[in-house]
Amino acid sequence: MCKFLMISRVLYDKGYSQYVESARLIKNSHPSAKFMLLGDIDEDYPNHVPREVVENDVRNGLIDYLGYRSNVKEIIMGCDCIVHPTYYNEGLSRVLMEGLAMRKPIITTDIPGCRETVDDGVNGFLCEPRSVFSLTECIKKFIMLSHEQRVIMGKAGRIKAETTFDISDVIKIYHSITDKYM
Image (cartoon, rainbow, N blue to C red; front, side, top):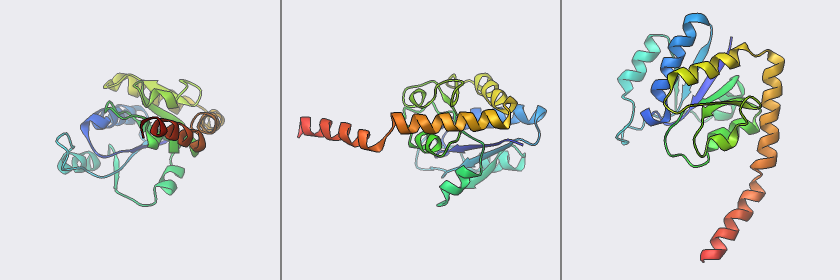
């Protein structure tokens, strides 16, 4: 059984519909696959997913909605893969960097801020934004990997996190920018 985890505010432009529809398609051939959603329903945001829609998707067995939780690290440790199908203008996603650091393979969209975290086929897979077909194909590819291949993919993500997203390097860049304008 594969456990997929999406961590996000529950907004349509974070890829909610694509995630749920991919779950529906995957469960037809892999009924034991589990699709979890962790995050708040942001009712103040105009493009939020109504609570009734989420509850209906839970009732239909498509997703497990975890809501807001403080034990995010434990939940990430319990999943096999982080799925981040956003087409929201993110910037560099903290969720993806945390997933990499915790040796979790990533499936995310090929947009700025997300594509920088994934070397396609090495530490995860890139899908086309807003494409249920592309996301579903990436999830299928992941399911077909052996346990050993998934572990190797997770380790590659950790190496990418350590070499590309070292916090001391990020702080140096931040200081060089703020020093320039202050």
